[in-house]
Length: 172
Image 1 (cartoon, rainbow, N blue to C red):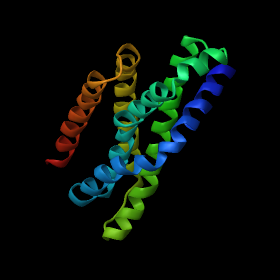
Image 2: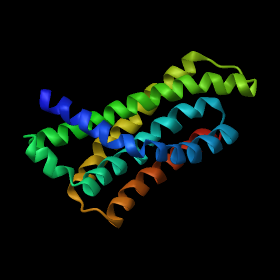
Image 3: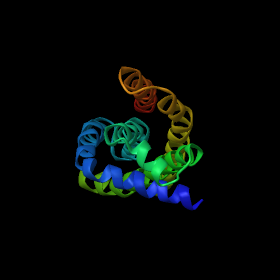
Image 4: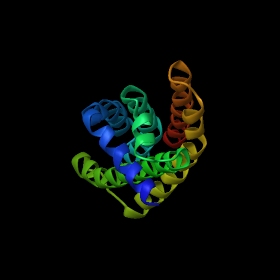
């Protein structure tokens, strides 16, 4: 368990230098959702970033920094790397869901819309369930595939499914 926690710490530290670039997908997702779907939909939109951008960023950091060598030198086994990567993605998903829950009432206030915490709680639970399923199903593809266009296709599949879900929520 300690090795997994250490791996999660390494994962989060490897993301720190590129954290400023995470603002780009956030703006690309948040602005249209806020303008066209309303403040409630910020919760699943921001939670969805956990499945779209976090795994690609984490695996890209591994490859660019050749962190597999570091993990081996630190005595972190492959099984612990896999469990730690799942834990990191889970923590990022929870953090992004909390950010969405905190931003939604602020956006509702700014837009002059009413805000109901029960709806926000239901959307949070549904978002975590859906994105959690995507993460659980999608991370093996990242572990099994070499870097390159195939991983991009793996991310695009999630984007397509999330877009269909959002359109389903948006269209009455």
